[in-house]
Length: 121
Image (cartoon, rainbow, N blue to C red):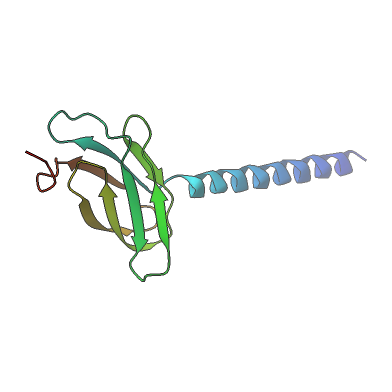
C-alpha cells in the first residue's frame, strides 16, 4: 500500500513538472522578438503618433505596430526577412530591412528627422 501512494506522488510530481515546463515554453515563445523606439532627431522626444509597417519579404503578410506614449513598440514575428517602414506626419520616412531569427531578438531604435521637402516657408 505504501508503494502505491509513493507511485501516485511520483506521477503527480511528474505531471506538475511537465505542466510547468510547457507553461515556461509558451511564455518564451510569446516574448517579442522585434522591438524598438521612435524619437525625433532634434529633441530626442518620443514620437507616439508614428506608424510602424512591417512587410514580410516574400510579400505574404504585413504587420502593423503603433508605439506607446514613450515611442516604444514591440512585436512577435515569425522567422524571416522583413522591410520595416516608419512614418509620421511631418517627418521623413524611415526604411530598414531586418532579419528575424529564432532566439535572436532585434531592437530597432529609429531617429526621425523633419521632412524638409514638405515644410512650408
